[in-house]
Length: 353
Image 1 (tube, rainbow, N blue to C red):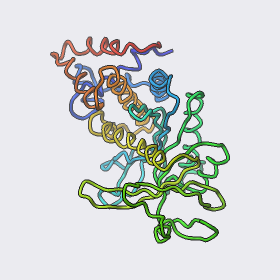
Image 2 (image 1 turned 30 degrees about the vertical axis):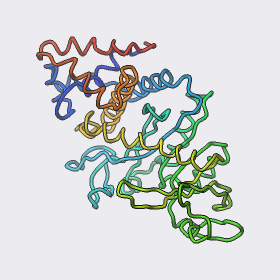
Image 3 (image 1 turned 90 degrees about the vertical axis):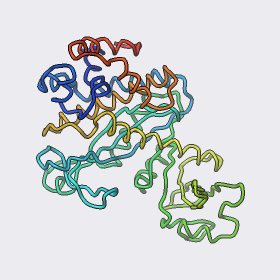
Image 4 (image 1 turned 90 degrees about the horizontal axis):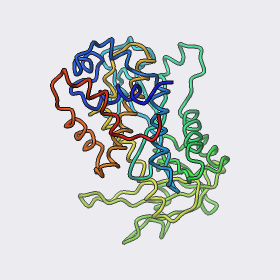
């Protein structure tokens, strides 16, 4: 069985090193070869197992937790030879690029968030080429939510996702399994309300339905594809004073303000993607093998979990502050770094081996 120090070495290197997180650059940080660093990388299952243990330690006394699921592109723009990569549309630059499409599951209490598992959604051209049953986002969601419930059997779990996950299949599954879910919903969806069919944005034409004044949200019960759901009309005002309306859908009943508060807890997964890409090298593994890519991604998310652990311990406001503190502790000459990396994991005082 792998011990904690073996599992933590590579994630700690992604935190402490500077520059690109390639095997070669990580190796230069401790005066080792890229091949040595590659061998240091542990299986993804070991990294996520450790992250799950951190999550159960952090959240063991929480009565309510959020299971947050979302996907992002891991850009591999200059390589078409990486196993599993494909062409995906990048909404930020408005064109298709070579990438992995990663789907991530996190557990959060609203303040701290720990990644506990991930998977890959493959491009259509790859699915058509290979005779294999690939998991889709609904399949992954069911696995991830089930895993979260099993990790925290005594906590109320609320599943959060954006509008792309508000599908008939997923909402039906949540209703059938009595799973509390909160998602954004597109305004063109047709619902049945008070015996009449209307789009969500059509609700705003009904007198008294649009939130006004101090009222920022209104929740109604409506049917969508025969399912009875809670629809929350949310009034938002940005920093410029401009007002907009968005819609949320839920499978459970609470006050409108609580629906809004619960959905806001989806934001940490966006912060995780940003921090993991900018500071921990989520996109910077250059191996052609999908397994190595997956092992690297899992190690990066374990590094993020360690930053969250440190963030709580030292009462930081952001994981970037925790990462900065760790970097400051190892501002040493090259020949001293490896010994420090071997020992530094002990500061976390993790209650498991």
